[in-house]
Length: 456
Ligand code: UD1
Ligand code: CA
Image 1: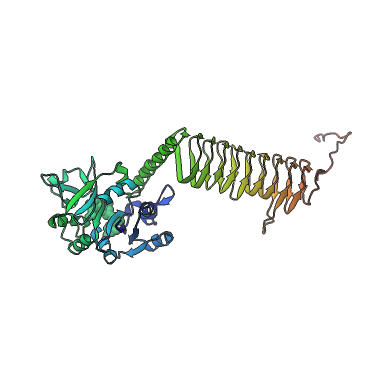
Image 2 (image 1 turned 180 degrees about the vertical axis):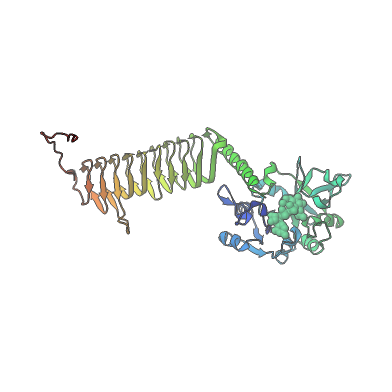
């Protein structure tokens, strides 16, 4: 297989975003536009990726520095041809050069495969689309036999050429040796005084090369992001697509228009039911028979089988064991690991805590930096006082313990197995197993007491 040299053009300013952030760093489904393009190329075999950057380039480079990429700076943006020219030294004669745009995030793998399948020394492979409103795009000009003979930019087009609806997507695959030859012949002799990459097509025809055209399955694949409206449109297209894929694989989405996946589900069970306004992000794993209630955010978490997540929960970096029930209105914060059959109820916040099998924390509690055993019942309003203003301390609650409502556990502290803590206690010392511990003043009733009477 031929070496593919992918050149991603990303030097454009993106002024219509009205942003301090370079356009290609704006995010679609929580991932920078340029990262989407990169991920598509990274899936190709024998491929190396070069990114041509310009405006705000250092920031682009810095924020994607973990990618395996050759970075090339285009100091002045003198056109798409000039941008590709920056990579001239990197192009080997027998490479296949694939040219992509950093602000066109949703190109599919199959469209790329289609392009690459057609390119050779005698054939340039071009992706086009037919648009109702072709304004602004380069038009594909064909001869009477229907063969592509050139591309004419909007600003250079005659009225006859402007009437053409088939447009250049800018996405091309070209044989390395040919491209190098044509790049050196580009000029700025056009309406915009730019080096147009599109001029290579007429040169190709001059050199008896054929121009093969493919079209993407969806027009959205080749749409660029120039402003925030277009960004939102592509986001919705992308999300609806993901929703369709999930539904095909056995997930019920109450409303696919109100579902967002900003990450990857690495492992997905069957019979998952997801209500409206659920946002899943990061790396996720979801078991069988899981239901996720409305208005819930889950990121970077593992959800076991038969889990019920009631509405309005936030779950981050957590593991939820099988047959557990969470919410409504629960917040499960990072490094929480819940075993099987755990119940976490409303207005409960849990952080950096492990909870053993069948334990229940059902109402209005804060449990942080804790190890909760199995079969524990934590009453309403329990607080682990884990922070003295400087350091964090741990609370350990043994198996089978019963913590009465409105208890403060002043960490570091241990509650023994099967211990009972009386409601309203402030526990500052370790409590023994089995016994009842409570710390509250005795209740008294004053028999002869009378309410004060207003003085006249
Ligand atoms: C270009 C094509 C046009 C096509 C359209 C599709 C040319 C001359 N025209 O037009 O035929 O219909 O894309 O969207 O190729 N870029 C650089 N450096 C530069 C100029 C551009 O890196 O000096 C990058 C931009 O960041 C962008 C891409 O190249 O990712 C396209 O640039 P843009 O200015 O949007 O091209 P158009 O004029 O719209
Ligand atoms: Ca453009």
